[in-house]
View 1: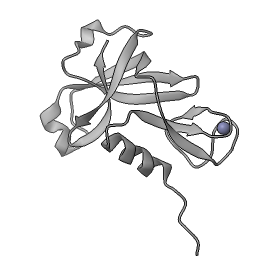
View 2: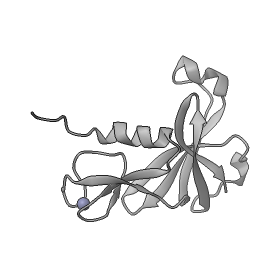
View 3: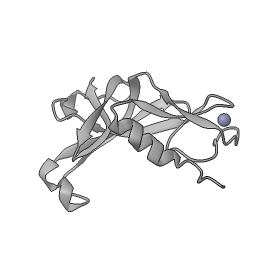
Length: 129
Ligand SMILES: [Zn+2]
């Protein structure tokens, strides 16, 4: 009986929902890949796992949202989305905790990630500069 291939995206969301700060990594070459996929973008292997990541990552950029992309985001306005570098080939979008002032952000600075609830869903969030 054939089994369905694992959906790496669903596996990642499930791990985040349990509070685990992790991303997909290739078992063949060790490269961290995000967004997750069935094939490693570095070596084309198809054997992957979820690995815990260092919560201290590098801030690349950010943008503050003033118009809700969907109705359930309206109560959260305004909020800031950040782009962080987790490795040479992995960029991750995360939410900026509202207690971290946007004015304190500097591109290239280290920031700390945690899994936090964002509009009812567990997502990576920058919780401290
Ligand atoms: Zn690989």
